Image (cartoon, rainbow over all chains, first blue to last red; front, side, top):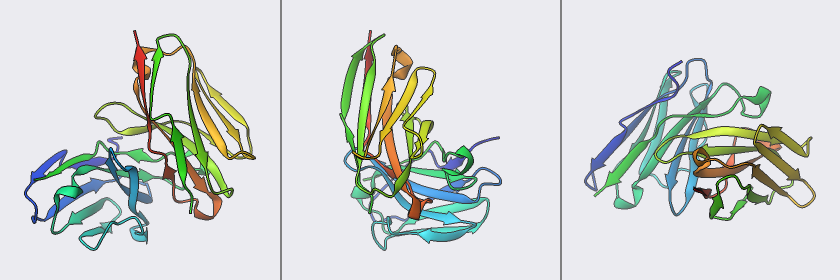
Amino acid sequence: DAGVIQSPRHEVTEMGQEVTLRCKPISGHDYLFWYRQTMMRGLELLIYFNNNVPIDDSGMPEDRFSAKMPNASFSTLKIQPSEPRDSAVYFCASSLSFPRDGNQPQHFGDGTRLSIL
Amino acid sequence: GENVEQHPSTLSVQEGDSAVIKCTYSDSASNYFPWYKQELGKRPQLIIDIRSNVGEKKDQRIAVTLNKTAKHFSLHITETQPEDSAVYFCAASPWYRDDKIIFGKGTRLHILP
């Protein structure tokens, strides 16, 4: 089991550019979550999907952020245009079911460290 | 909605001593409380969780307690070791949003030699 795979691991770009973060969940997991982590705000849930369908995007900070899950093995988080305040570590996580069912935890990827100059 | 407060934000403990991290939650409907450990530069990983139908759960040197009346839960680490140094996050999930976990802001634990 390769775990949740995120790419890239690091991204440095200038403000105004489009940024695309990618995530491959664990095979068979039907929930996928996108989080943002900063020192000031901690770990924030941005959006999550169930069976490729977005369920709750209330954590998405603004319209510059969008996420898609075209199939069960791939999701993207896009920021366009990017701003310096978007600098953070972005984590993707997946779960076989609701975390509280049958002790199934959320499995996190290694994250993407994003720096917007 | 649910709000989770975590204290302290930083904790330094002598190796071999115990560490306690405390969290409070606001929504009495919350019934699932996981704890995650995040080592420097790495991903958060679940270390223990507790459901509202139990008051305490142990796993080797780690224990979690839950007080539903007071709406607080705590993580206890005994006989701390250098590898316990990390950021610890508590979280809560209400039954009516059992697909959503609200995280606390984290506690940075330093184990002193």
